[in-house]
Every structure is written in structure tokens, then in C-alpha cells.
Length: 376
Image 1 (cartoon, rainbow, N blue to C red):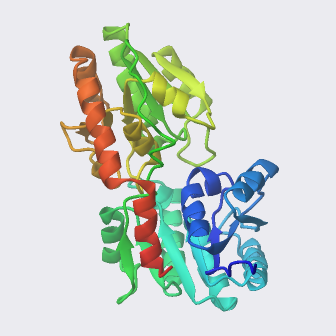
Image 2: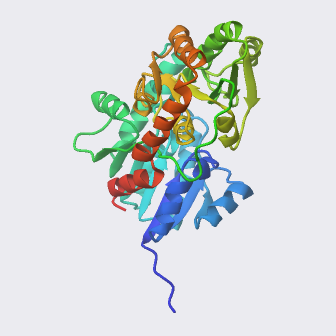
Image 3: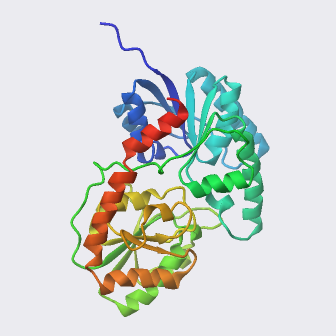
């Protein structure tokens, strides 16, 4: 019996190998189920990620991506090598996410003769988050130029929230007449992230890279006040240090720990931490759509997050959690305290979180919308 002919080849290009499984695994698996040959591409794909990709039916391919967009020689080398790899893989479509894969990938795909390049914008990052400093201003200038160039070479541009789309369109980064779609984040695997029983004591949890833009400092300040007032409550933090200019220092983290934050370090599987928590907190300044919030919602946890792009879409204020202003510790503290003073809010809002995750963020429905936008 002849083997089934593949529907075509799709290359999925990222900048961080584990993200191919953690963030794009269900998307890759759904493409394979549709009959596509999928080549997952990122720098330094280790044996564990390679094996996990093989298990869902995808091939793995290492690609070099420059560490700094400001180094023209390294950028040129990365572009040359990526173009050669795409010529060898010969995909019918490329789906790229995060800034370097999008901006370099669009040019490489055009040079390799790949007509269908899909730019997936999963968040605007450091360059486009409000704030001062020469590094941020320089990063914004460079990123704006790179995105404009990439979008001119993209068949489809997919955003994960309407605010990011509006920002890019108002800044004229998106070219006139471009095919633009908004999907509900990356979605969440509702089978993998199932509702877990709630703990008896109030336990708050934040999961994020240790960056100022994630609201880590505001969380630490709110915890210091709440822990003094409610010593029976626990306040946990999962994450890892980031070399970004906006990174939290070890001294800052030590100060937060002294104030009552329980630092759990980096976790490859966050489900046990969410299961142990009562309420999920993410005071981020801006997101694409925060995956950690979706994970907590799927596991039946109420959410306190910011009324900021990407975050505000995940919470109906007063229904499955509370929205607070970004960059302010006092409103965050007040919202968290509501759950301590009225613990009956936790199961009621947690149930509504799960329902919202089922209705809006099911990963297979989100993937179907993305594939339609990509013409796959």
C-alpha cells in the first residue's frame, strides 16, 4: 500500500528550542494531523526537544540566529545560513514567531523562494513596552525598521491581541493592504491543564521571567505589605533570571524574599505549582497573550492581572478575577487582599476561569484560526 502523500511542508521557526514544544507543540501536532510534513527549526535543539518533536511527528532542524540584531556581520551570516537551510527544506510555508525569526525569516524565505511566510506576533517585547532609557529607545528604532521590512515580505501577519495590531497599524509598521488576523493567543491544551483541587490556605502564585516589565517589582511590593498584614497567606514566585536590561537583580530578589516572597526557581512543568496555588497573579505591563494566565485559568484558578494589552482579554473584571492598573503596587495589593478577606471568591471565580478557557482559548480552535489565516 502506497504511503499517504503529505499535504505539503511547513517550517516552524522559533528562537528558543524548548518553545517549539512548550508553546508550539500543539500547533505542530495539529499540522501533522492535517497531513503536513513539519520541520521545527530553532537554535541548539537538544536531544530532549528533538525526541519530543519526533514523538509528535515533526522533524527537528538546528538554525543559527544572531544574538544581537545590532551586529551587521553576525546578522548577515545568520541570514545566509538560514536561507540555505530553507532552500534545502523547501517548505511550502514558514510560520515564524518572536522578533528574530520573523525579521530574519521573512527575508530568508523570500530569498529561498518560499512565497507563504506567516509572521506570528506573540508580543511586542522590551522594545515596545513603555519606559525610558537609551537602550529601549534604540531597540524600538531597530525593531520598527526590522518589522516593517519583514512585513513587506509576509503573506500573512497574525497578532495575538487587538491592541498589538492597533499599535503596529497606527505606527505604520504594517503595510497598507496586508493580510492581518488576530487570534486568541497560542491557546491552551485543556486536556493537559485540567482543574485541580484548591488548597485550604490562601496561596498566591506568579510565574514569569524575572523582568521589571512582567511586574515582578510590583508583586514584591504588594507581597511585603500583605505578608505583614496576613501572615497566614503564602506568596510564591516561579521564574528565572533574564539578562535583559530590564532584568531583576539577585539583590532585588533577595529583598523580595525577605519581604515574604517564596521563590521556587525555574520549573519546566508549572502544573504542580498552579495546583498548589489558590490565585494566579500576573501584573505584566504588556503581553501578546500570557500563556501562564491561560494555564491557571484552565486549572480553575481566578486571576489578578493588569488592564494592559494582552492581559485584559483574559479576565472579565469581577467575574473570573480582577484587573488592576499596570505599574502600581497598591491596586494589586488591594485586589489580592479581596481573596484573603473573602475566600469564597476563589472557587466561584476559578470555575468561571475554566469556562472562559474552554469557550475562548481551546488550543485546537485557536490553531484552526491560525491555519485559516495562513492558508493551510
